[in-house]
Image (tube, rainbow, N blue to C red; front, side, top):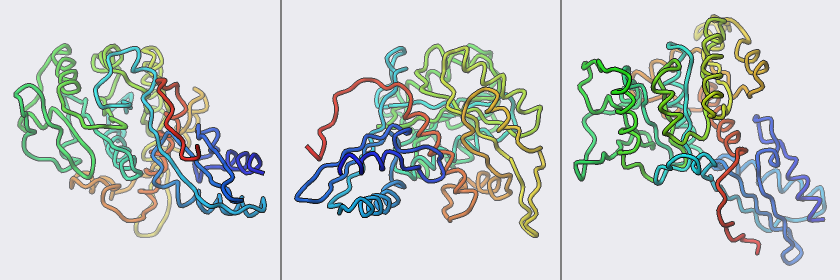
Length: 355
């Protein structure tokens, strides 16, 4: 009976994510305690959203099998991934996720910031590193002001906003100061920002890359243990053409691509509700199918997203159960699940509550 319940739980489709618990790498144990079933589910992604849904599903499946559930335990263990064994790992940072694009203007930084906030809302500890040395935008989007502290004159304390840690060259120079640097200077600055920031205990560090496939991206691949990359595009052909270059670049430098995010996919008029595909339709889906990578999310073109970012309160941080916020949350969950499927650094198993 326990094996039947365990099998049925493994086949449960995670809501709106299109994968089962088993496909997402969950470990499920069912034990009999005094004639009742004790269920333990361990997952490799933030699970704050999962437990209420899973509790209802477990009770329903147990009732169908003629069982009663005495307890449900959901454990979230976000592992360090195998790339940490190849490159020098960062203390306290389990996984680095790079967010890149082939061209500018596709909303890459907006996606990066809201993904970070959505992962944090699901229970992860998250940081954001603004790797766009020439055009840093993270301070504005997170509403950060002032200079970060340096307790010892050698390292920097990250600043915090909306529950995430953040660092950017934009926090260290005046807002109007242009970074007139050659490539080696920019890449050196990125490396220092990454390694000399006193990051806390982070499940994910979101690396907001500059657009393109140049020096910053090459340095990242050679020196930074990136666990996976997310490529942002918009639906029109010119954007997906450049996104293809970014995707192939990540492949060549052996950074696994977790999937694509299609931004500005559709605009819904705030007055009449008419939906219009201003930049074309289905470009992200076609590209994902062509290259065999998941389409992690299709995000709308919405004035409120831009306004909230400009105000320093990104739409995920603004609260409210809006459709756009939900799209960002689903996209972040797909990113976390895709990463959880990847090879992980071996470590001793935690002691199970079921014995």
